[in-house]
Image (cartoon, rainbow, N blue to C red; front, side):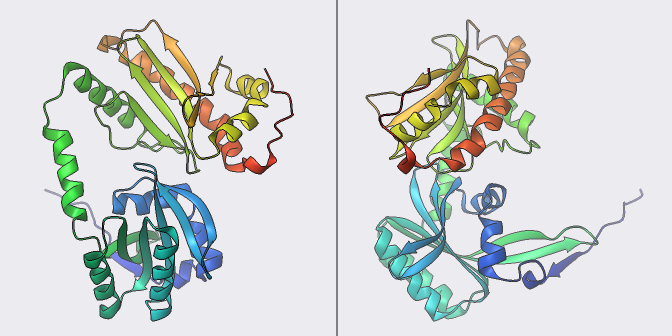
Length: 330
């Protein structure tokens, strides 16, 4: 039996790729595709809120939200060995944000700083979580360098809670509808696993499936409704300025619908803090699995159109620019 030749992993100095933290590493990490790598390590869905965010007397490198629960995640970077100054900044950030996950990334953790994070995780309540991660770069032969995040310190119950949640989903008895939803989203995930812009999450037995769009408080979503016999694709806004953002997008309604090429429903949802822009395909039978390839093709096509029309607009939205006296585009 012939064994194909294997390459050898070679460690790369982080300074060969990122010369500085502020100008190179932080902007690199702030990109959605790179935050996704970090999120996979932490079992989070990270969406960037701000870079160089003022918290007390310091400026945090990256402020995110975990899309799974809406909690704050603050990231502080060091392309060197950890030091006392950054530890003090982390404590200031925690006191300023009240409920937060702190992620301290460095190339090397000293034993005293790892022990300090372990101690903080022991004495603080569940509102505060502290992670210590070492970042490395590796390549095989002439391949591009690839990042790897190693968890050095983590909250005491983190591994157990993540594992228990996953096992509950996998082992709980599912109804026929829940089982159908899980199979449908699993097929959608498989279709999109190599897509450039649409990064699928782990499928769950629920009637929706979400995709990051590059800004906290916004996501693209797909839905499958077995009661009303329809499937849908939407932009969902769940943000403290959702109504203002919705109003700004509504003023571009004609242009957005022309770009997407679909008739959209603009749902302000007046009794909720969220808003939605959605397109439905009604009159389908979600239980007819023979038609799933057709439904999936339609859903992916609509997702691509939504992403192309909304991604840049969402990132550029500024709620301070809204003019309540301006007429709405209908």
